[in-house]
Image 1 (cartoon, rainbow, N blue to C red):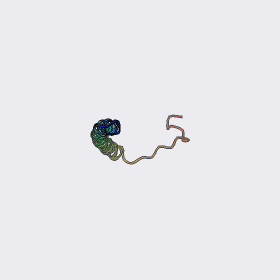
Image 2 (image 1 turned 180 degrees about the vertical axis):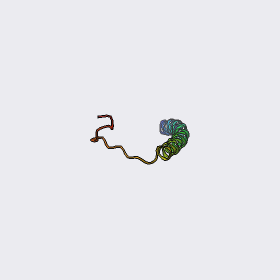
Image 3 (image 1 turned 30 degrees about the horizontal axis):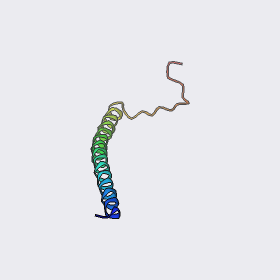
Image 4 (image 1 turned 45 degrees about the horizontal axis):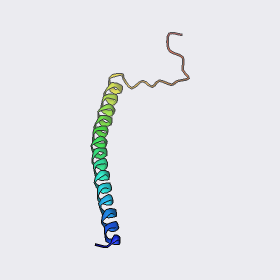
Length: 68
C-alpha cells in the first residue's frame, strides 16, 4: 500500500470512531429528552391539579397578604 492509502484508511478509521461516539451521545440525549419531557408533563399536571384544588385564586407579588 502507498502512504497515501494508509493515510486515507487512518482518517476513515478516525471518522468512523467519531461517528460512533456522536451516535452514542445522540442516543443518550434522546433518552434524557424523553425523561425530561415526561417529568415536565407530570409537573404541569400536578400544578394544574393544585390550581384547581386551590379554587383558582390568583396571587400577585405586589399584593399584601391578607394578614396585614
